[in-house]
Amino acid sequence: MKVLISKSVFGVTGSAQCSQDIIRYLINNNHSLTVISLEGNNGFSFETKQNDLLNKLKWFIFYKSSTINNNISFLKKLYWKLKFPIVRYFNKRKINKLNIRHLIVNSTGSLDLLNEISLKGAKYFHKTLVVHESPDITKFKEVKKNKEYYSQQFSFFSDYIFVSKIVRDKWINFINLDRDKTHYIPNTIREDLTKNLLTKNIFDLKKECSLSMESKTILCIGSIQYLKGQDLLIEASKKLWNSGDYNFDLVLIGDVYESFGLKIMNMINQLKIDYPIKYKKPVSPFMALKYIASADIIVLPSRTEALPRVILEGMALKKPIIASDVGGVSELIENNIQGLVFNAEDVNKLSDCMKALLDDGQFIKNLSEKAHEKYWNFYSRKIYNKNWSNFLDRFD
Image (cartoon, rainbow, N blue to C red):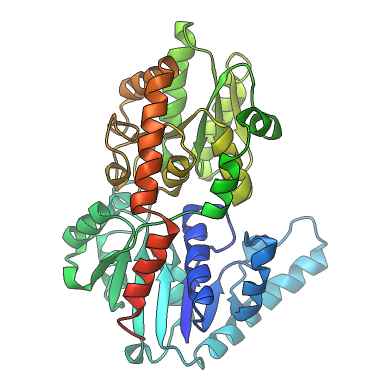
């Protein structure tokens, strides 16, 4: 039996959708699978035709007290607060009775959940960590984990899958990993959805997403937090708006995280009086793709990344992309070939990249076509499935 541990499986984050990709591959290829997560399976983004896959899974949900609905009565809240620890206790007992042959932990963000479970007999089964994060995250005060933490946590695993070659090399140097235990499997996307969206009229899509028909839309999708750099995009946009030469809407979509997220929300509320800036709440993975398909330019101004899924989605949907040169971004985009790349935190360069795409329609078309071609040559689901098959053949 294979066991997948993933903090998030059902959301719109890249890590959650990567969990879904792993589940799809394993179930579609007749692997026995148990999933352990912090979330229940409501809202899981399998489309109707794939709902039967859910019936083939065994789930253990480690609910958190923070998931309790604040609108329910005091007695119900008390009931759930008492019940959750009991559920977790019996889940741990049941999990440790499983006949685990291969443990897969998706994302370093799931390591705390792995530690809570306290798996017994770990030396008797294979253990794989799928790494979506760059070690550069440790440079930011928002991330509380350090080199010693990751060195200790990584030592539990037999091998590691990295979604980016550049990020793999960073981790090898950061905590002295054995390269022979590392593997490269880049992310992929929901091609069944993107192919359908490519057949749609962009004005129909803009109408469905309530986006402007008169001006271009620059879109940024990602959790509103310091690491994602929305503040840089807002500053670059203000420079262009204030010049009086550019007419475009800026749309931000994502969960709001901690004080920085609230700071950005306050900034948006103040700016939207005078500038065409909008915030939209997180949407389903399909709606996120629909927003990308209806946008004119995609911007990822992150301070750190691994292999951003939103860039892959933009490539598959033939959208011009601007991204900061962090993590594995340069594996996806060669500057002036598949998109435009700028040095992280360089607001002036970001502003120049936006000008270039707002000014030149033929340039946009050339970039978009090259990006689309690169996606199908290197990151398609067919390639993804083959990579996983080759990896698992070593153990099955």
